[in-house]
Image (tube, rainbow, N blue to C red; front, side):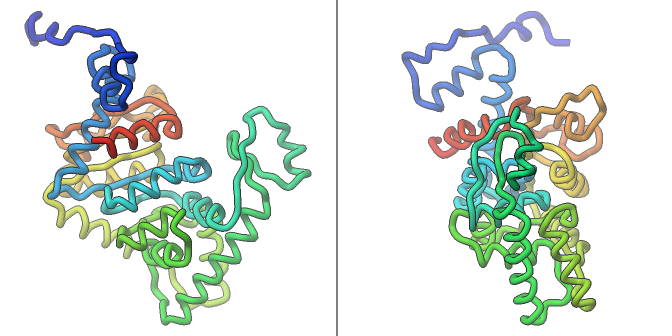
Length: 314
């Protein structure tokens, strides 16, 4: 065990924001503030910066769908526009929201709105975001069917999720994260693609075109190539669930992530994957014992603007 002098090497210092108002000075001040999540947030930005600047590191970005219903979509879009990551792993809802918001608008609401009234007015509620029904189901169905028909006419019969997301991205505008993934040849893998509007349309298209097959094992081969070709690997995981787990799962095979930053609001006491700290993944070999890693407890749509601002200002 470390001696007393080793333990007491970093004194807690008060913030002095009035003297230093730039974003990086504030993050540096957080690192010296002693507690509580501020140090993890500061450390997370430092780890992400080191990871992004590491030329030999293959970088994964995973995130949950709900973020794409908020302005955080613009941050994910810009991170891919600026080629900060080499692969995206996400859920079907992220595709749904990206398509919907490429053609229509979502609106600010409130967590305490009357959902029965919203149903009568044909408005969905996602937390405190309002999604008009006309901007979601029918619109997504129409656009996805057009994409699948085009792929089918081009001779595509055995397709992966990253091929479908790439083609969808080619049809969207520059406000879309899928567009920039397509533009910069960043594969977007969706292991749970049938759990959403896009996935339902793929199933429906298959009912009418039995020779059109969704081949998720091609996605796994893509991930295998990425992790085994990598000299080092790192991940920025925003929210838990299948996108986080699939990122960790594949990176265990070559020895684990060398960099890992995770944002979550989930508690760890229920044993859930979403609540598990990144450090727990070390015991599974999904993160190396020498990895630069941290878990940040906080709400992602609040934290992401500050994290991204700190990254681009460095």
